[in-house]
Amino acid sequence: MFLWIRDQKWLPTTYLSLIALAVFGVGDYLLQGSSTWPATLLMVGSVAFSRPLPWLSIALFSAGILTPQFLKLEPQISLSLATFSLLVLAAFGTKLQRRIGYALNVCFGVAAFIWLLISLPVGGSFYGVELPTAESKYALFAAGFVAIIAVNANAWFFGRLFITRITHVGTNFDRAIIERELATTQLSLAEQDRRFEIARDVNDLLLEQVSATLSSAEAGIFSAKLDPTVAPRLLENIYEGMKKSHSEIRRLSDLLGLQDVKALALPGIRDLPKLFVSYREFGYGVNYRLTGYPMQLDDGAELVLYRIVFESLENIRQHTAESTEVDVDFIWQGSAMQVVIKDNGEETRNRLEKALTGYTEQEDHRALVERPTGPSLTALQERAALYEGSIEFSKVPGVGFTVSAAFPNISKYRKDTN
Image (cartoon, rainbow, N blue to C red):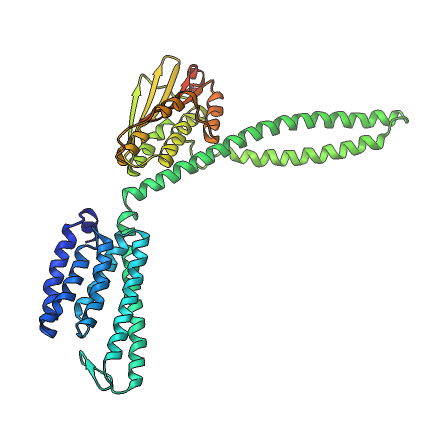
């Protein structure tokens, strides 16, 4: 039912309100007569507008709860529709609407119940519930107060639970979030692994240097013993210190050697289609085009290309609205290749805001003279430079942002298939 209500704003709640009118309206009429119709119609209206117009629904059930008191009627069974309206409101309303709806439902419900107990004389009854003593009013008030809060709290909770389950749990959107988190984790592990490789190379170099120094120090000890004027104690201390350093560096080298087996393969060009699917689920139209014949590059080069596309898509997701169109072009030509990522985020924003002018002359001037900067952009430039590449960032006035990465000698980093 919640999928039906989510996908169509007016039709589901209209049908539900008609059913409520037939069931609760007839029930109230049989119990108390035609004087119940004003409150019943208000409650039925709150159901009809709970999905398309939440604020109007809140106003209707607030008035519907209090109406029987002004008409001097007993509580109507149609008042339970306020709980159903709150259920739908909790699922599809904004945070402010949900909070105000719950607060007014509880406050007016408690106020109506208190008014009923005050106006009901001792010894009186309603719907078969008798109040033989004044103390019974207090007991009934305590029970009613707890029941009103509990019922409305459950309606609010189940509304949030249902919308969360149908929107996220097991849906394509949920899988898109997992794919994005996996991509982020892969990049982090890949960067960490590259640092380990560098540290391991440096460690091996230091190990050789320390080994050579250790041999020299050991030879110096014997030379000093032959010549009393040489301070052998100094050489012995050097020898002991270098021996300890050698032991620690050897231990570190063995520890880093365990990183040969990687937990996850480095992400590369082959993983881009899955990344594009996840961003399409986020609401962005990602179009992927391949021109020329791609090469099989080594892991480091593929990681840089993947990182450029990933960071560009993340930047688009953070700074543009949903429904933004993104074009990702991989162009291979001989020994060179180019990656171009373009978006129409500014055009989409202007269209959503119904702007009459796409851009001004000042924006056009800024786009020509100002160069986009930022830590993430600088990091991408540094990574591309490792493979003799360069990246240009540009803003197209009234359209969006463009990232262009060129690698004129990418064939030097072709993967060795032997």
